[in-house]
Length: 362
Length: 275
Image 1 (cartoon, each protein chain N blue to C red):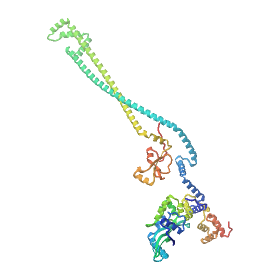
Image 2: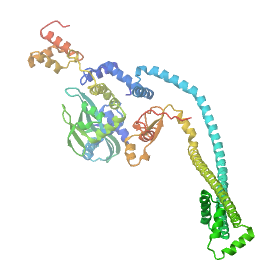
Image 3: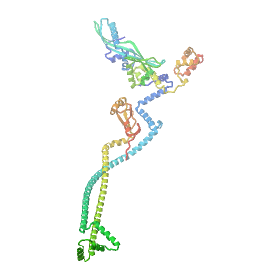
Image 4: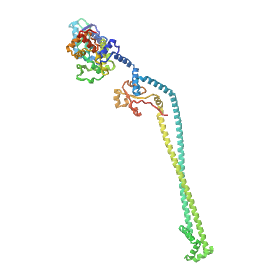
């Protein structure tokens, strides 16, 4: 309205309004005019919207807005006091990031070193395994050679292993009957049905002056040789046990090293993840810190008819904007038609229009 | 017809000013006639204009005169508020012919400017309830009972069918999207300023109709019909009631409550002492 109504005109307005609205009064008209003047001031509308929002979102009535405002101002002052500490914390965080980078480089170097050591240990282990195999083969050969020697001795003595065992049993049996082996041999020698028994007896007597003595000597030699062979077998068995213990120890060492390698590989993968995260987000650090300084983030999008229609076919055509205060119009097209942007709230897992403040961890 | 010697109109703006001057309207905005241009029947008006100009030229300069004229048709609206029964805003549109003619006679050649109202005025009547609904962009609540290439007719409850040109409705809708009805009326000049309080009052009443508490009968503002009805309900015959109201009319005021008006009417009817 370019000019204001006069008092008479206001009376006419009020009287005419009574046709449709019997309770209408001049005071109501004047209050409407007052409201129109106030609404012409965009700040007034913004304040009213702010108060409505305060009531809807915080449950604070208009009459309590001033107290709430004071409280918010106090909170703002407190938050501003916290800013230097937070800035200091940010600097500290940066230093920690740098330190972490240094440590990461050190870990990388250590990892490389450990990999080299692992390669060395692996080669040593392979050599030891090879040596062990050689040693096993030698031990087998030696065992075979000793067995062969024992067999040779048996052959030379013209006895078999079983015969030696039987001889031992015979000796024990004879001893039980109070008869010495020598006597048995003497008797058996003498009573044997050999063709040249006489001749042999004569030669035995000539050489040893006694058959019994000859048999005793022979028996002693055999016994002595058997003891040697037995001790040699025991020694070889001991060596084999030692070699098996060494193989066991080396196997345990190998398993330990494999565990270390697995751990180191996991560390390297984790460090790679940290490095990728750092490279991807470090550049946006300043923007994120700035957004975190906002009291809240409101995600909005233009919702005028044209934008809504084009947005159905091509969402990128819709203007999106973030604010920390309630908006009154779209900054892109100036339309008062706008709405909450669903996507960020969906990503954050929040209900549409929920107040959101960006927080960072330590 | 007003005839001015010389050329007083060389373009649409000058022609419009001449038409406003002839119609006696003051302070009308230049863009107001544009809203009513679609109501001018150009073909018919052109042939009528030729006759009118020819008659005027011959009456001034004789039958041998030849002429050539530039012509403009300017629709000039005048406003009227009708508050009886259903309140209406009535717009009467007169089309003015403004012609700047070069007239040649056997003796000389001269310039003449003529201004004349053409044909019958066109009247459009807009119930203020219709204007209220138009402001609310809810015209769909009225049934369309007729439509042709130029006009649509709506059925408005309690009023006569509303017959309006499409072009006028479209222009008015667009215009009211950005400015108030009062501002629009002020563009009609002084007549608009006189209408504005009454139109604004009706629209405010309609706007606040649903949000206001019912008024007790004793606080209800009196209307002649309401007063007669009230007296009828008190066992007076209709003719008696009308006579009583006529008798009491000098003491009644439009801003009286119904209760007060009944008291005065009864006192006057009984020959009582006026308050």
